[in-house]
Length: 122
Image (cartoon, rainbow, N blue to C red):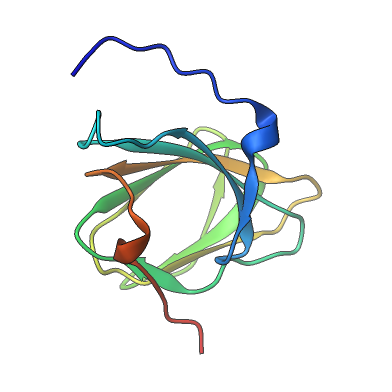
Protein backbone atom coordinates (compact mmCIF):
# COMPACT_ATOMS: atom_id res chain seq x y z
CA UNK A 1 0.00 0.00 0.00
CA UNK A 2 1.17 3.51 -0.72
CA UNK A 3 0.24 6.84 0.81
CA UNK A 4 -2.50 8.56 -1.18
CA UNK A 5 -4.83 11.51 -0.96
CA UNK A 6 -7.96 10.88 -3.00
CA UNK A 7 -10.10 13.75 -4.26
CA UNK A 8 -13.29 12.62 -5.94
CA UNK A 9 -15.22 15.34 -7.81
CA UNK A 10 -19.00 15.59 -7.32
CA UNK A 11 -19.38 15.07 -11.08
CA UNK A 12 -18.50 11.39 -10.57
CA UNK A 13 -21.67 10.70 -8.60
CA UNK A 14 -23.87 8.16 -10.42
CA UNK A 15 -27.27 6.53 -9.99
CA UNK A 16 -27.01 2.92 -8.80
CA UNK A 17 -29.69 0.32 -9.62
CA UNK A 18 -30.38 -0.03 -5.88
CA UNK A 19 -32.25 3.29 -5.99
CA UNK A 20 -29.70 5.78 -4.69
CA UNK A 21 -26.89 8.00 -5.92
CA UNK A 22 -23.32 6.86 -5.20
CA UNK A 23 -20.04 8.74 -5.09
CA UNK A 24 -17.13 6.28 -4.76
CA UNK A 25 -14.67 8.00 -2.44
CA UNK A 26 -12.27 5.05 -2.19
CA UNK A 27 -12.60 1.65 -3.84
CA UNK A 28 -9.52 0.15 -5.45
CA UNK A 29 -7.29 -2.89 -5.59
CA UNK A 30 -4.57 -0.78 -3.96
CA UNK A 31 -6.67 -0.73 -0.75
CA UNK A 32 -8.57 -4.04 -0.83
CA UNK A 33 -9.53 -4.08 2.85
CA UNK A 34 -11.98 -1.15 2.72
CA UNK A 35 -14.19 0.84 0.37
CA UNK A 36 -15.90 4.13 1.17
CA UNK A 37 -18.85 5.48 -0.79
CA UNK A 38 -21.18 8.37 -0.15
CA UNK A 39 -24.79 7.36 -0.73
CA UNK A 40 -27.61 9.83 -1.31
CA UNK A 41 -31.28 8.83 -1.13
CA UNK A 42 -33.90 11.33 -2.29
CA UNK A 43 -36.94 12.25 -0.17
CA UNK A 44 -39.61 9.54 -0.06
CA UNK A 45 -37.42 6.96 -1.80
CA UNK A 46 -36.49 3.48 -0.51
CA UNK A 47 -33.51 1.56 -1.76
CA UNK A 48 -34.22 -1.92 -3.11
CA UNK A 49 -34.17 -4.75 -0.61
CA UNK A 50 -30.75 -6.27 -1.15
CA UNK A 51 -27.91 -8.12 0.51
CA UNK A 52 -24.15 -8.24 0.20
CA UNK A 53 -22.10 -11.42 0.26
CA UNK A 54 -18.59 -11.68 1.67
CA UNK A 55 -18.44 -8.28 3.31
CA UNK A 56 -19.62 -6.23 6.27
CA UNK A 57 -21.24 -2.89 5.46
CA UNK A 58 -21.55 0.06 7.80
CA UNK A 59 -23.75 3.10 7.22
CA UNK A 60 -22.54 6.31 8.87
CA UNK A 61 -25.47 8.70 8.63
CA UNK A 62 -24.24 12.22 7.83
CA UNK A 63 -27.49 14.12 7.29
CA UNK A 64 -31.20 13.60 6.90
CA UNK A 65 -33.46 11.03 8.53
CA UNK A 66 -34.70 7.65 7.48
CA UNK A 67 -35.85 4.20 8.45
CA UNK A 68 -33.47 1.27 8.08
CA UNK A 69 -34.66 -2.32 7.77
CA UNK A 70 -32.16 -5.12 8.41
CA UNK A 71 -32.90 -8.84 8.63
CA UNK A 72 -33.69 -9.86 12.19
CA UNK A 73 -34.32 -6.35 13.54
CA UNK A 74 -37.45 -4.22 13.67
CA UNK A 75 -37.37 -1.16 11.36
CA UNK A 76 -35.58 1.69 13.13
CA UNK A 77 -35.33 5.44 12.60
CA UNK A 78 -31.83 6.74 11.92
CA UNK A 79 -30.33 10.21 11.68
CA UNK A 80 -27.07 12.11 11.67
CA UNK A 81 -24.41 10.47 13.83
CA UNK A 82 -25.95 6.99 13.80
CA UNK A 83 -23.93 3.99 12.65
CA UNK A 84 -25.66 0.90 11.24
CA UNK A 85 -23.64 -2.35 11.09
CA UNK A 86 -24.81 -4.93 8.56
CA UNK A 87 -23.23 -8.41 8.56
CA UNK A 88 -22.78 -10.37 5.32
CA UNK A 89 -25.94 -11.76 3.65
CA UNK A 90 -28.37 -9.74 5.80
CA UNK A 91 -31.24 -8.27 3.82
CA UNK A 92 -31.27 -4.48 4.05
CA UNK A 93 -32.91 -1.34 2.78
CA UNK A 94 -33.19 2.26 3.85
CA UNK A 95 -36.00 4.76 3.27
CA UNK A 96 -35.66 8.52 3.34
CA UNK A 97 -38.51 9.75 5.55
CA UNK A 98 -37.29 13.33 5.81
CA UNK A 99 -37.66 16.54 3.84
CA UNK A 100 -34.07 16.60 2.53
CA UNK A 101 -31.71 14.09 0.96
CA UNK A 102 -30.58 11.28 3.27
CA UNK A 103 -26.78 11.16 3.01
CA UNK A 104 -24.55 8.51 4.51
CA UNK A 105 -21.20 6.86 4.08
CA UNK A 106 -21.17 3.18 3.20
CA UNK A 107 -17.99 1.55 4.47
CA UNK A 108 -17.41 -2.02 3.31
CA UNK A 109 -14.82 -4.50 4.52
CA UNK A 110 -13.37 -5.90 2.43
CA UNK A 111 -13.99 -3.43 -0.39
CA UNK A 112 -17.30 -3.45 -2.29
CA UNK A 113 -17.40 -5.22 -5.64
CA UNK A 114 -20.55 -5.49 -7.75
CA UNK A 115 -20.48 -9.30 -7.77
CA UNK A 116 -21.19 -9.20 -4.01
CA UNK A 117 -24.45 -7.27 -4.54
CA UNK A 118 -27.76 -9.14 -4.82
CA UNK A 119 -31.07 -7.33 -5.40
CA UNK A 120 -33.77 -9.34 -3.59
CA UNK A 121 -36.65 -6.90 -4.14
CA UNK A 122 -39.80 -8.85 -4.96
